[in-house]
Image (cartoon, rainbow over all chains, first blue to last red; front, side, top):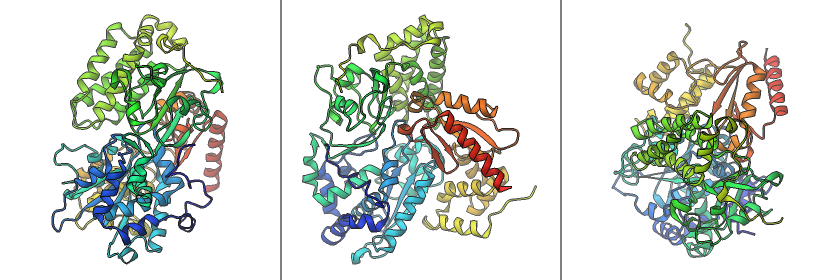
Length: 451
Length: 168
């Protein structure tokens, strides 16, 4: 059983409300931080914890905090990125919906560490009902003296505001989020300057993911060193994984990053295996942007070693034979799924979500969708596969923000690992309309543990 | 055409939204204010409404237009009383969202992007709403309807018709 630091209490009846949350030990980290620690000491604990950003990039959170500029007389802001929009990812929603005070608690401690008196939660517009949950939790925290002026007599003032987005994946990119928070289109900014120097309203700003900020609570409670002992190597602490697709038990799981991918998929504690006795074909382990892997490369690395659910192991082999932990959006495809069709839906997603600022992404995502649609509907040519490869290469690395890469990688990985399925679509246009290709030859045989 | 203006209650909410931001940065309230306007004025934003929002926030109309046209949640044309926003991205597709979209279309006699002639229902396909584990799904107003089946779709349509009836 994995150690749980974030969701341990998520199912205690009434945990959504302050009184229950407090009775279960909530807000202890705020007391500790504001009464016994100074901001520098908090940053130090987060650094020691090895906590890596949980939004997808995996950048060390303590280091990000230490970059914040502190010019005299200029307010600083912490912004919580709750714009969770990466296909396959729904972990932040779960955390905010079931245990909102954990996020508020983490935000208060983090705001104190960074010197943010006005902290913003930027939440995707579709999560409209969660806005109410968060605002209620914030009001309760105010009423109980954990927000507002002179919190716990520390002299520290803090307010938290919730801002709804309005349907734009790009606003999960931190500079686009800042633009959106300023009431503009979500066009990413050119860096530098980085938000830590010039962020929202040109003030020093730190943007962190929901799960990252919630993880600050156990880090302060147990100490950074203790937190770092959980997990393995540079994958410290616990990680929320949202599992979906063709599995028996879709949902959000907290893991301590020491379990194998095979255990995660087949164990009853997690995904519970593939429904209807089907076999595993492929998986996107970290949200739609990261490379899809065929079953054989998912369960074992190219060196034949067991693959584990952590940052290092999932990326073992680079993009040639590995993938990424990303945001923890774990999408499973069974043997009946068509990789071409699935990739088409992702290409359509990125075309829809491209902000249009950089031409390689604006034009390239549209071309990729069109070509994939042709192949999927039996109108593809063999040269289209190379054309797709060429386009994705010309998007990657040539855009202001990582959306270009995020759009390129799924297409690249699908061709890299499932080229025969693309070719089969081109060679058998009629048959491809009637049935799916099934398991790729190299993904077979798959070791399926007996339940 | 009669210009819609916020009621007193809506103005209170408007002022609450603007007060979250530093003085002079009232433009930051634009996204939430557009949500408020859309909810207040029949589920969509007319050019007049956009101009009204610009006036309230003391910014140029173009600053409102460029935002209203960027974000997918703002409807720039009238929509049905009930909008079925069905997700069609990969994880939902794996769980049969294409069948659900086709079924709703067949049942209501409309294609994605269209509204029924009685103005009751709009069918819209959307990209990932963060409910991948509970797929297939749709957004209906403020809430998500998840684990959709044809039976559930039938029940939702009946529920909407019943609610609409009780309002009249």
